[in-house]
Length: 187
Image (tube, rainbow, N blue to C red):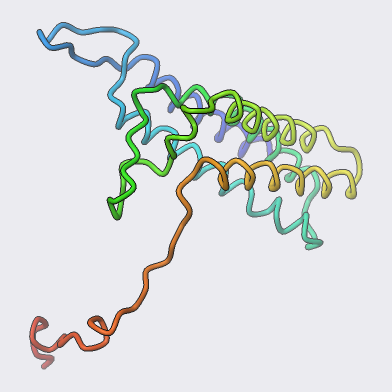
């Protein structure tokens, strides 16, 4: 369990370290230390969120009543606490690149984050606090309750500040597509 937590912290440190150390080039080509291309920052927060969601899988299962090693769940909480502490810092204004009419926009982060950054910070801090409570929970019920609280705070933030996932829809045109016209014949 300790090795998993260390690996997650190392991933977060690598992502944030790269973000801090990366350099951008100004109009004249001069390096400006401490700045990063917006797309790189967006990628860093995307990778961080993927790892948080991966850590949430056993937490959600345990919170729903499935058996799990409580120490592993607490360890996931500690790892997520560290990641969620860093997360709001990956939203500088220059990463407000959401395009509502683009099928696959550069970011799922809605402009509302920057319009009401205090509310975003409040929700991010609630998630971090819930993860900390999970890491410190004593007993299975307290751990389950903390896991549910973490899921609720994450979902509240996503509901307000992230583009919702809309699964692709099968159209009549899709159903009528002639695959044989574009695929080589089978032998």
